[in-house]
Length: 121
Length: 106
Picture 1: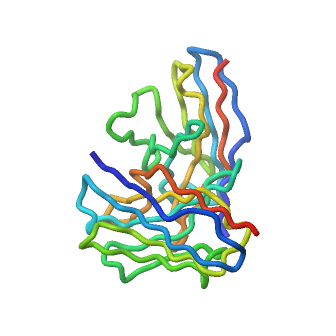
Picture 2: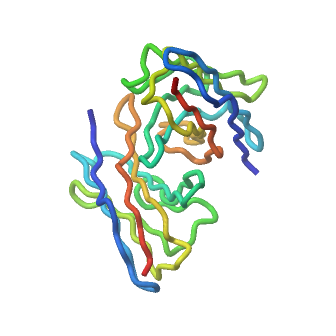
Picture 3: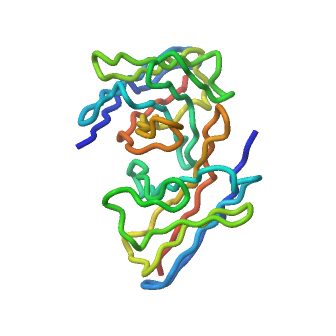
C-alpha cells in the first residue's frame, strides 16, 4: 500500500522559513516524480512544485519561484520543500503526491494527508 | 498562463447521472485527469488520461473529451459521491488545476 506522510507544517511569521518533509513507502520512490500541491482554506487545489525522478529537473509555480526549493533524498524515500520568505497567502494545507507515469509525470496518483502551514504574525 | 474552467456547482438526484465539465484552450491535445476530494480528506485520482479509471474506482465514473471541453460523468449517483471534483492537466512545465466543482447529490 502506497503511503505518503507529510510533516513540518506549523505557525510561522511572515518572512520566516519552514521545511516540509514527505516520507514515502509502499512503492519504489526513486522511480516516481514527486510534487507538492497546496490548498488554501476554503479554496481549490494549486500546484506548487515538481521534481523529476532523477532530482535534476525541478519546476515551480510562478507564485513560489525563487522562494521555495524542492528536493528529494531517494536513500530515505523522502521529499522536501524548503519554504523561505513566507507570506500570508502561502497559508494552506500542503500535500505531497507521486506520479508513476514515468514518461510524462502528468498526473498525481497518490496523495498524502497534508500538513498545514499558517503564516501569521 | 493556461486556465481550466469548471462550474462552481452541479446537483444531481440520487441514482441519476451527473456531468461535470472542464474547459480549456486546445484541451483536445492534452491529457486530462480528474480528482475527487471529499470534505476534510486528501484528493483521490478517479480518471486519468481522459477516460481511464485507476484500480479501485467504480465503473460508474467515466471521462470523455470533445472540442475544448473534457467531461467527468458519474452514473447512478450515490450520496457518497458528494465531493469537490477537480480537472487537471500538464501544460509544458506547469501543472494546472481547474477551480473545482462541488457535486451535491439530492
